[in-house]
Image (cartoon, rainbow, N blue to C red; front, side, top):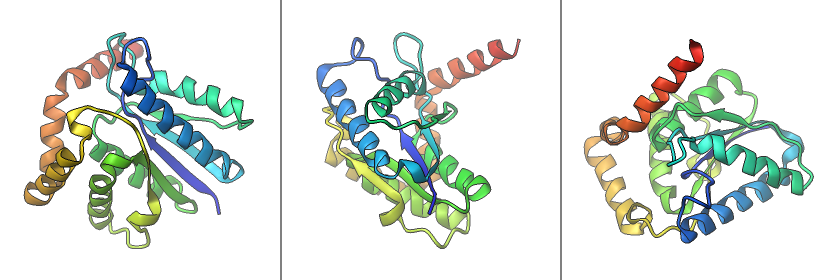
Length: 201
């Protein structure tokens, strides 16, 4: 069986910009991801990472995380191409992109999406939602959504905050929550549009 593997980025890999606890948490998350993939590397058809948020240096999550992952893969003897998705700014958008890409391009592969453990329940709920929306009946959240620990003291990463988010998702719906989150990240989205425009010119 071949695999399509997708990984959610959680900020940039930028130790000089981030607090020590954030860097430590992301370091462990990336290490766990690399070790997980290394065990099945010969069966990975494609590996994507998603994250379009910008850091203080004007670089995206994907821009900084991709080279760090490549360096870590090289250390364990894995030669793997990494495809990037910088057009998603929320975990909801990433989940939809992951499932639609799988259905359109990798239907013969077993899909796996990697998230952090604090957000597992929320991601599983969103996964089930989009499976229903896209009429996907042969996938199970328990098998597809894989989580790894990522130490982080940000309020949004705490259990209570994630419990509250899950409650809101159930009350007002996945699309409504995503719309609110996108509004809060408007600055990043506009920057992404400007960069895309300048590249075309």
